[in-house]
Amino acid sequence: MSQSEKFEVTARRVAYQGYFRVSICQFRHTLFAGGWSPPVKREVFERGPVVAVLPYDPRRDEVALIRQVRAGALAADRHPWIWEVVAGEIEAGEAAEGVARREAVEEAGIAIDSLMHMHTYLVSPGGCSEVCSSYLGRADLAGVGGVHGLAAEGEDIMVRTLPLAEARAMLERGEIGSSLAIVALQWLALHRERVRTEWR
Image 1 (cartoon, rainbow, N blue to C red):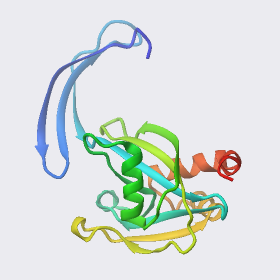
Image 2 (cartoon, helix red, strand yellow):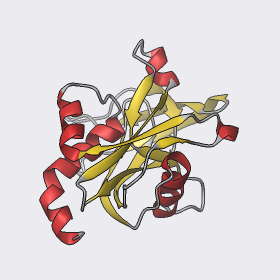
Image 3 (cartoon, one colour):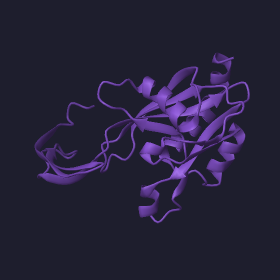
Image 4 (cartoon, one colour):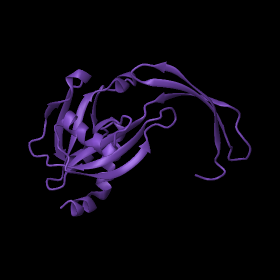
């Protein structure tokens, strides 16, 4: 961060608290042309930290994707069933790697052998606080599939394994609309040879 990029939060309050939280944040910041901005007031969707993991079998060159109904897609007038990667919220005191392994079992019935960090990024910084730690998870995907998820959390998750080349073709056809999945698959496409060498 540049030393000239400064900000000051002047007020913050919770506007709504339900399954998620919305806060109202007021702040000011330095301007590129010099000086300070007037007060800026924004509503922020407080999503918090999440972890995403793309299960990958380097021997078979296959990935596992999941498909489930998403309320956000419905609200955006998109088809509500979305192809995604395994993901979950990181609660206070939890490590991202542990959550990644747990969610892979709960959402897809997959045991992760080892994890490789890909990215940590803000998903939609214009109005959401969600920070995603994204991992590639080495796994044996032979026989993986079926329907998984926790009934107590209303999860109905279909799991599909497919060759990485087919997943990349789905990306090209615009069939994968989840940012977490797009980032993970593009990262793997860029680093596939190195990953397969390391995970031989």
